[in-house]
Image (cartoon, rainbow, N blue to C red; front, side, top):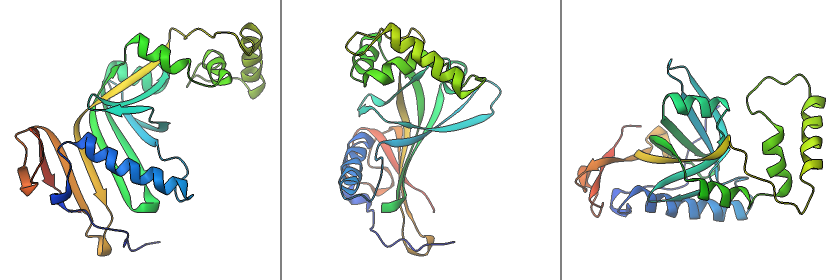
Length: 222
């Protein structure tokens, strides 16, 4: 099972000054592709973590915001990823935009977002999703589907539609502060374009003109 990638190219001369601006450009392309039905969930990303013992785990979550401070997602702090991030804040994000032959890979450290930011996002969610955050002990073994639905029904009765659901004390946001961001563009014959921003550089490394201060750029062999 093999496919030739002929969607486009990725030239170092076209790079933005920092990876967050470059991500914004590619994300806009993905959103446009989603509007035509090519991509189902443009903000879906794979979050990979590892606990103190170094055993990795991965899952798909939704990106809920990004700027020059980092990439934000939300979760139950008691979930497997939450427990692992508490023990080891190093994290990897993967945006698998296969239909347009692109990937973005972020490596960095996760830090919790302020409570006010968590509350603002939590109360923007659908009411049912807010209730579900109370009903499910994420990543814990549950006896049956019936037990889960009963837990949800109890919370839904406590906070009916139209009432304010409090933010669970064990739930909140993480911001991944990037140390590296790789932009991968599929090319023919597996000679893909891979350009990686690395924090701490003086800018312009690897012949990438226009790259801002604080970032170096490397071209990686495919």
